[in-house]
Image (cartoon, rainbow, N blue to C red; front, side, top):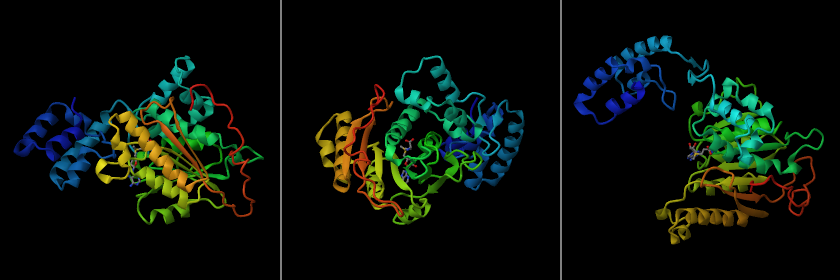
Amino acid sequence: MFILFLTYNYIVLGNCGKNAPLLLEALLENGAAATAAEREKSGKTAADLALAQGNTDLADRLRSLEKSAAVTEKFDRCELCNAKMKSRTKLHFLRDQVRNKKEENPLVLELFEDETVVEELIRPVYHRVSNCMHLRKEVTESMALIHAVKRLKHLRNAEDGSWRECHIVDLCCGSSITSALALQILPGCAVTACDISAPSRIPHYKEGGVSDRIDYLQHDICAQSFMDALRQRIKPGRRIVVLGMHCCGELSIRAIEIFTQMKAEVIFLMPCCLPSKASLIAPEIYAVKDQAAQYLVWGQHLSDRAKAVSDSTDLSVVDAVLSARNVLITARGRPVPVRGRSPVPAAARGQSAPAPPLPPGVF
Ligand SMILES: C[S@@+](CC[C@H](N)C(=O)[O-])C[C@H]1O[C@@H](n2cnc3c(N)ncnc32)[C@H](O)[C@@H]1O
């Protein structure tokens, strides 16, 4: 059966010319009408798309089909955003694999170390996480960063072991999986998730009862106004941890600038695609031909940039991340006294103290 919004996109917005109305009619008569309540990624139905194109007659017609299609649907919808809900999400299936001892990835297993975390993420308000397309891969990416944060023992409150002095900034967060996991795994931490895209991609944090700990900053991170907007979100007295999972191209450079300007404690950056050759940002990338090698050169380039502005940097390949884009750059900020507290001594900041042992296969 054709999904109507795809049909609509293809025929009306695509290149079907004068035959578009005929094709649309044929598809509606042959089953597409039953899918009129479907939504595309940004949450729009075919009726919404028709309306946005100024085709009000067609929009009205599709809207009435939308209502009858919704009544006959055999699945539930999210009462908050109307998304299609499944009785078993991808997270349920992943949990089955773990419980049946069929999962071996150490980063996935680390998420399941505390089942209460998973139970929370299985709640319908988190359906945008639990049902995300490539959940297992995304979990390994997010957990690589959270694993790194967990090793910053000096950021934990000595009295209750919580992360209440830590403010995480999740740059280019996408659907904010890393933020959602951090909220659950690092009790007490505050999170600002930033992305240029509409908040329709992120979980229903308010209804999940965590809006006092997380906010979403919809902003272009390259805009001049971004720094002020971000500063206003940081809770007073907190140490900032910047996370940049798969910021595209030169956005990784911007992430390092943000880390510096925010005087953050640390940045964990896993770069994604390369800057274009024409940009001349890192011409050394294109001196090698192999794509995997080019990515490593890009990682090294970013690490060198971070080195120029930080106390110490590190570059490692995280094999357990299920993506070829798995270089992790760590840069520690120069110490800044937090109001009312003495600066943290270098040893306590982990510079001379050896890092705790890692589970096999991680880092
Ligand atoms: C490859 S995705 C990574 C998403 C997420 N961190 C993850 O790993 O799943 C890149 C994200 O960067 C966002 N983005 C692109 N340009 C941006 C900009 N100028 N400012 C803020 N976000 C941007 C996109 O909307 C997208 O969500």
